[in-house]
Image (cartoon, rainbow, N blue to C red):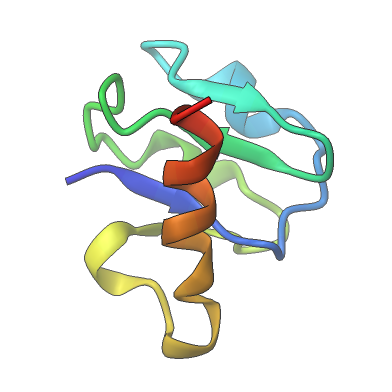
Length: 76
């Protein structure tokens, strides 16, 4: 199960630096986690200053659109 970055992302870059497998990519308005590369280590969640990153099955209901947005980013 991959982690998901929600629209609470402020693009500070700490998560990119912390990811041991380089699964995080920069998008136009936020960062995204590649679900094929994410090893579910949670390192990114620990450094996110805006609490924008969740395991996919723990994304709050009001932020669930981020799951589809993340998938769309990597389907391009």
